[in-house]
Length: 222
Image (cartoon, rainbow, N blue to C red; front, side):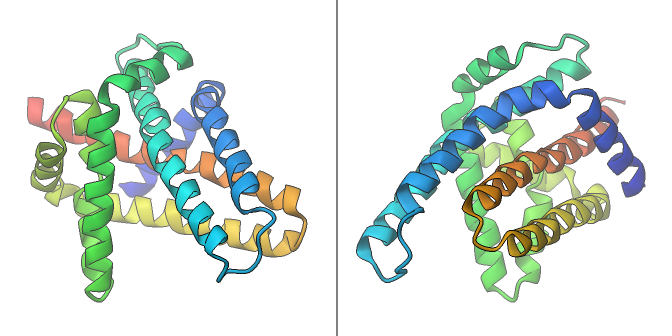
Protein backbone atom coordinates (compact mmCIF):
# COMPACT_ATOMS: atom_id res chain seq x y z
CA UNK A 1 0.00 0.00 0.00
CA UNK A 2 2.82 2.39 0.81
CA UNK A 3 4.16 2.06 -2.75
CA UNK A 4 0.78 3.07 -4.16
CA UNK A 5 0.84 6.22 -2.07
CA UNK A 6 4.45 6.86 -3.07
CA UNK A 7 3.46 6.68 -6.74
CA UNK A 8 0.62 9.12 -6.07
CA UNK A 9 3.05 11.39 -4.26
CA UNK A 10 5.47 11.44 -7.19
CA UNK A 11 2.62 12.02 -9.65
CA UNK A 12 1.33 14.99 -7.63
CA UNK A 13 4.85 16.39 -7.35
CA UNK A 14 5.34 16.27 -11.13
CA UNK A 15 1.92 17.77 -11.83
CA UNK A 16 2.41 20.70 -9.45
CA UNK A 17 6.17 21.15 -9.61
CA UNK A 18 6.11 24.80 -10.66
CA UNK A 19 3.65 25.88 -7.97
CA UNK A 20 5.52 23.98 -5.25
CA UNK A 21 8.78 25.51 -6.41
CA UNK A 22 7.25 28.98 -6.36
CA UNK A 23 6.17 28.46 -2.74
CA UNK A 24 9.36 26.93 -1.38
CA UNK A 25 12.37 27.96 -3.47
CA UNK A 26 12.38 31.69 -2.60
CA UNK A 27 12.69 30.78 1.09
CA UNK A 28 15.21 28.00 0.50
CA UNK A 29 17.42 30.23 -1.66
CA UNK A 30 17.22 32.99 0.97
CA UNK A 31 18.22 30.52 3.68
CA UNK A 32 21.11 29.19 1.58
CA UNK A 33 22.34 32.74 1.00
CA UNK A 34 22.03 33.54 4.71
CA UNK A 35 23.97 30.37 5.57
CA UNK A 36 26.73 31.43 3.18
CA UNK A 37 26.95 34.89 4.72
CA UNK A 38 26.89 33.59 8.27
CA UNK A 39 28.95 30.41 7.94
CA UNK A 40 30.70 30.38 4.58
CA UNK A 41 33.99 31.98 5.57
CA UNK A 42 34.34 30.41 9.00
CA UNK A 43 36.09 27.07 9.36
CA UNK A 44 37.21 26.93 13.00
CA UNK A 45 34.43 25.05 14.78
CA UNK A 46 35.63 26.31 18.15
CA UNK A 47 35.31 29.93 17.04
CA UNK A 48 32.62 31.65 19.21
CA UNK A 49 31.57 33.69 16.18
CA UNK A 50 30.87 30.52 14.22
CA UNK A 51 28.83 29.10 17.08
CA UNK A 52 26.79 32.30 17.32
CA UNK A 53 26.26 32.46 13.56
CA UNK A 54 25.22 28.80 13.49
CA UNK A 55 22.58 29.64 16.08
CA UNK A 56 21.39 32.61 14.03
CA UNK A 57 21.16 30.50 10.87
CA UNK A 58 19.15 27.83 12.71
CA UNK A 59 16.84 30.46 14.19
CA UNK A 60 16.22 32.03 10.79
CA UNK A 61 15.34 28.65 9.30
CA UNK A 62 12.99 27.94 12.20
CA UNK A 63 11.21 31.28 11.80
CA UNK A 64 10.75 30.94 8.04
CA UNK A 65 9.81 27.26 7.98
CA UNK A 66 6.15 27.80 9.03
CA UNK A 67 5.68 30.13 6.06
CA UNK A 68 6.74 27.77 3.30
CA UNK A 69 5.57 24.62 5.07
CA UNK A 70 2.21 26.18 5.91
CA UNK A 71 1.94 27.60 2.40
CA UNK A 72 2.64 24.17 0.95
CA UNK A 73 -0.02 22.50 3.09
CA UNK A 74 -2.59 25.17 2.18
CA UNK A 75 -1.77 24.71 -1.51
CA UNK A 76 -2.10 20.92 -1.24
CA UNK A 77 -5.54 21.27 0.30
CA UNK A 78 -6.63 23.79 -2.32
CA UNK A 79 -5.78 21.27 -5.05
CA UNK A 80 -7.79 18.56 -3.28
CA UNK A 81 -10.69 21.02 -3.06
CA UNK A 82 -10.31 21.57 -6.84
CA UNK A 83 -9.67 25.28 -6.20
CA UNK A 84 -5.89 25.67 -6.54
CA UNK A 85 -4.67 28.92 -5.05
CA UNK A 86 -1.81 31.05 -6.32
CA UNK A 87 1.51 30.23 -4.60
CA UNK A 88 1.73 33.76 -3.18
CA UNK A 89 -1.80 33.45 -1.80
CA UNK A 90 -0.84 30.17 -0.14
CA UNK A 91 2.20 31.74 1.53
CA UNK A 92 0.27 34.80 2.68
CA UNK A 93 -2.48 32.56 4.05
CA UNK A 94 0.11 30.71 6.10
CA UNK A 95 0.73 33.87 8.13
CA UNK A 96 -2.50 33.15 9.97
CA UNK A 97 -1.16 29.87 11.34
CA UNK A 98 2.51 30.84 11.67
CA UNK A 99 2.62 30.80 15.47
CA UNK A 100 0.61 27.59 15.84
CA UNK A 101 2.62 25.75 13.23
CA UNK A 102 5.93 26.97 14.66
CA UNK A 103 5.05 25.69 18.12
CA UNK A 104 3.70 22.41 16.71
CA UNK A 105 6.95 21.89 14.81
CA UNK A 106 9.07 22.70 17.88
CA UNK A 107 7.08 20.40 20.18
CA UNK A 108 7.21 17.63 17.59
CA UNK A 109 10.98 18.05 17.21
CA UNK A 110 11.45 17.98 20.98
CA UNK A 111 9.38 14.79 21.31
CA UNK A 112 11.34 13.08 18.54
CA UNK A 113 14.68 14.26 19.93
CA UNK A 114 13.78 12.96 23.38
CA UNK A 115 12.76 9.64 21.84
CA UNK A 116 16.01 9.40 19.89
CA UNK A 117 17.95 9.82 23.11
CA UNK A 118 16.02 6.83 24.46
CA UNK A 119 17.74 4.29 22.19
CA UNK A 120 16.48 5.77 18.86
CA UNK A 121 13.42 3.54 18.37
CA UNK A 122 11.08 5.69 20.52
CA UNK A 123 12.12 8.74 18.49
CA UNK A 124 11.16 7.03 15.24
CA UNK A 125 7.88 5.91 16.78
CA UNK A 126 7.06 9.43 18.02
CA UNK A 127 7.97 10.89 14.64
CA UNK A 128 5.51 8.61 12.83
CA UNK A 129 2.70 9.03 15.35
CA UNK A 130 3.00 12.83 15.20
CA UNK A 131 3.48 12.87 11.42
CA UNK A 132 0.11 14.45 10.60
CA UNK A 133 0.07 17.04 13.38
CA UNK A 134 1.16 19.85 11.03
CA UNK A 135 -1.80 19.26 8.71
CA UNK A 136 -4.29 19.25 11.59
CA UNK A 137 -2.73 22.44 12.92
CA UNK A 138 -2.98 24.31 9.61
CA UNK A 139 -6.15 22.91 8.05
CA UNK A 140 -8.25 22.25 11.15
CA UNK A 141 -6.90 25.25 13.05
CA UNK A 142 -6.07 23.10 16.04
CA UNK A 143 -3.76 24.28 18.81
CA UNK A 144 -0.29 22.67 18.85
CA UNK A 145 -1.11 20.31 21.73
CA UNK A 146 -4.50 19.41 20.25
CA UNK A 147 -2.95 18.81 16.82
CA UNK A 148 -0.35 16.46 18.29
CA UNK A 149 -2.96 14.67 20.39
CA UNK A 150 -5.15 14.27 17.32
CA UNK A 151 -2.25 12.91 15.27
CA UNK A 152 -1.44 10.41 18.02
CA UNK A 153 -5.06 9.22 18.12
CA UNK A 154 -5.65 8.78 14.39
CA UNK A 155 -2.37 7.26 13.17
CA UNK A 156 -2.19 3.77 14.80
CA UNK A 157 -3.84 1.95 11.88
CA UNK A 158 -1.60 3.73 9.39
CA UNK A 159 1.62 3.52 11.38
CA UNK A 160 3.38 1.09 9.04
CA UNK A 161 2.19 2.85 5.89
CA UNK A 162 3.52 6.14 7.24
CA UNK A 163 6.73 4.54 8.48
CA UNK A 164 7.52 2.76 5.22
CA UNK A 165 6.84 5.74 2.97
CA UNK A 166 8.59 8.30 5.15
CA UNK A 167 11.59 6.01 5.70
CA UNK A 168 12.01 5.41 1.97
CA UNK A 169 11.69 9.08 1.07
CA UNK A 170 13.80 10.51 3.88
CA UNK A 171 16.40 7.75 3.69
CA UNK A 172 16.69 8.02 -0.08
CA UNK A 173 17.05 11.81 0.00
CA UNK A 174 19.60 11.62 2.81
CA UNK A 175 21.80 9.10 1.03
CA UNK A 176 21.60 10.95 -2.29
CA UNK A 177 22.47 14.24 -0.61
CA UNK A 178 25.47 12.75 1.18
CA UNK A 179 26.71 11.16 -2.04
CA UNK A 180 26.45 14.39 -4.03
CA UNK A 181 28.05 16.46 -1.27
CA UNK A 182 31.04 14.10 -1.19
CA UNK A 183 31.28 14.09 -4.97
CA UNK A 184 31.35 17.89 -5.13
CA UNK A 185 34.05 18.11 -2.44
CA UNK A 186 35.19 21.71 -1.95
CA UNK A 187 33.08 23.16 -4.76
CA UNK A 188 31.09 25.49 -2.54
CA UNK A 189 28.61 26.65 -5.18
CA UNK A 190 27.68 23.12 -6.24
CA UNK A 191 27.32 22.02 -2.62
CA UNK A 192 25.03 25.00 -1.95
CA UNK A 193 22.92 24.26 -5.03
CA UNK A 194 22.59 20.59 -4.10
CA UNK A 195 21.54 21.62 -0.58
CA UNK A 196 18.76 23.80 -2.02
CA UNK A 197 17.70 20.99 -4.35
CA UNK A 198 17.41 18.40 -1.59
CA UNK A 199 15.69 20.82 0.76
CA UNK A 200 13.11 21.33 -1.97
CA UNK A 201 12.79 17.61 -2.68
CA UNK A 202 11.84 17.20 0.97
CA UNK A 203 8.44 18.47 -0.14
CA UNK A 204 7.87 14.86 -1.20
CA UNK A 205 7.74 13.97 2.49
CA UNK A 206 5.13 16.67 3.05
CA UNK A 207 3.04 15.44 0.12
CA UNK A 208 3.21 11.83 1.26
CA UNK A 209 2.18 12.70 4.81
CA UNK A 210 -0.66 14.82 3.46
CA UNK A 211 -1.85 11.93 1.28
CA UNK A 212 -2.12 9.65 4.30
CA UNK A 213 -3.77 12.44 6.29
CA UNK A 214 -6.44 12.74 3.58
CA UNK A 215 -7.06 8.98 3.62
CA UNK A 216 -7.47 9.00 7.41
CA UNK A 217 -9.77 12.02 7.27
CA UNK A 218 -11.89 10.40 4.57
CA UNK A 219 -12.25 7.24 6.66
CA UNK A 220 -13.42 9.30 9.64
CA UNK A 221 -16.16 10.86 7.51
CA UNK A 222 -17.57 7.53 6.30
